[in-house]
Amino acid sequence: MIIAIDGFSSTGKSTVAKRLAAALDFIYVDTGAMYRMVALTAVRNGLVKDGVLHESALLDLLPGLTLGFSRGEHGENLAVLNGEIVEADIRSMEINRIVSRVSSIPAVRRQLVAQQQRMGLGQSLVMDGRDIGTVVFPHAELKIFMTADADIRAGRRLEELRAKGDHLVSLQEVKSNLLQRDAEDQARLDSPLLKASDARELDNSHISPDEVFQTAWNWAKEKM
Ligand code: DC
Image (cartoon, rainbow, N blue to C red; front, side):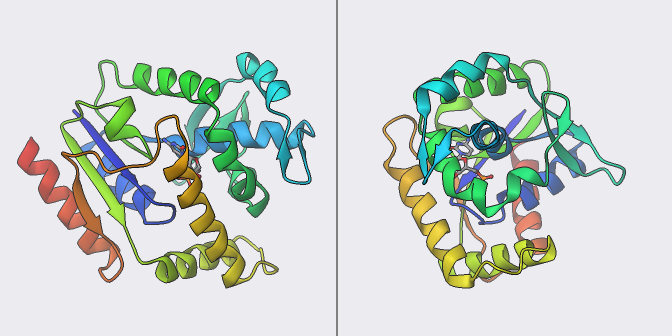
């Protein structure tokens, strides 16, 4: 069984996806982390200058990338790039600024979508992203599309960044980055962010994480 969770940035997709996967004993796949690992490769190799990405040089590095996940001591999901745990590195504002640009490159999407589809062979999973219900698994048994008010999303994301020690970034900067990423994700030509016609919408602005989980759990049980 495949559960596809798509939606705008910082709508709580990964929180509910992780909980659902743990409760159902399914694999959880965070596809945003995969695009972030490619963005990190671009940054580390000096391919982003003044916000401009050297696209062809990044494409040359793609075949050498191994993107994976492992479990931390407390069961947390960790992004692994060529054997190195990069979970903290991929969540910075520097990566936030460039990741939508990286994810708009068709050759990057082709490679990552193929890997995501292979992950779904023979095992049940909960996968979150932007194109899971539309492109990666158009026949997913359950599709959820998450939304939330932009101010609420920005406030939650700011708290996360503060908890990780980033005290320089402002609420305004976080909000404008979110809105810009949403706009770029919706406007790109290759598999833009959009709600699949058969997805169920879940607005997470004014309900608790427990209520979000309960709703998703009920929908999953119906399908099972
Ligand atoms: O979910 P996230 O914020 O970690 O995603 C990072 C970026 O990657 C986001 O700006 C859009 C892009 N993305 C995508 O294009 N397709 C996906 N399936 C997942 C993420």
